[in-house]
Image (tube, rainbow, N blue to C red; front, side):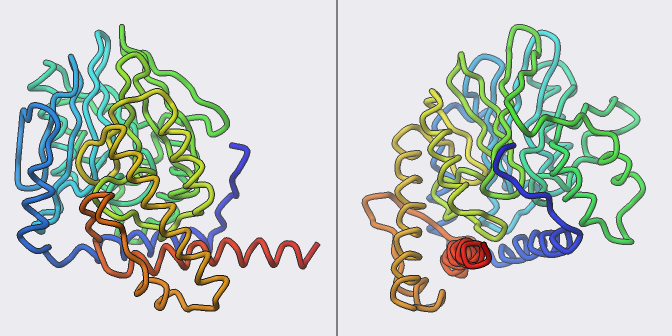
Length: 334
């Protein structure tokens, strides 16, 4: 990657604790109206549904998974999917729990006749990566786990003394993705483009099927849920989102929230532009991040947006301020 920084050990500890806090933010079930409104927003045929999520058929041999944790079931938490080719089956994300990953693997077997051969984890956050063990077992060989070196390092850097040897082994035995340029993965008659990006974390990956016009976006894109800026570099996030938006896809699987089309993607761009405008006003006027968050609103014209936690506006403003402070310090130090 041309725009990155290598995380230090101190960064590892800070980021891993941030990940735990992100999950803790979701400890309280949301109001019934918000839960029902989000869970009903399917775009395609639903082939499987559980309290924690639904699987939608988005093409021949293609399924998008939408997690629905607003009711308090955190088996999966993040979105994902299943991509089938003649020679292999890929699952996007490893989810919050082994039970979530196991469910997805079993659905892959049920729908394609094969256990997953590949898993791509878009970034290290626990709700996308903690369930790797669920893909493994005596009854099926474990799939290859594809991650960037930075994602692997951040994940391993957050291990505690209680982390099992099994989990450590799974994260040591990975297929490393390049961080400087896109690469392709051929599943047999179906070629995926895996693109390294920056913005939500220090290392993000998107998975695109260019012929089908579908992109799995990881947490660079959210739909109906205001994004988590806890580890974000906002300017890089904004840049990455625009590149995804103009990349030729018509269907986007966000990291969280219902599947999105071009209209929802445009609304999301407006949502992140809006919080940038509020942050710039706060920077110019000397507001605190709390004051900025209290003043910020999302226009009704952009649809219904829910926050995992009310502090997400504040954290987004803080992320922008942190980036601008670093730029100021750099200029003054040069």
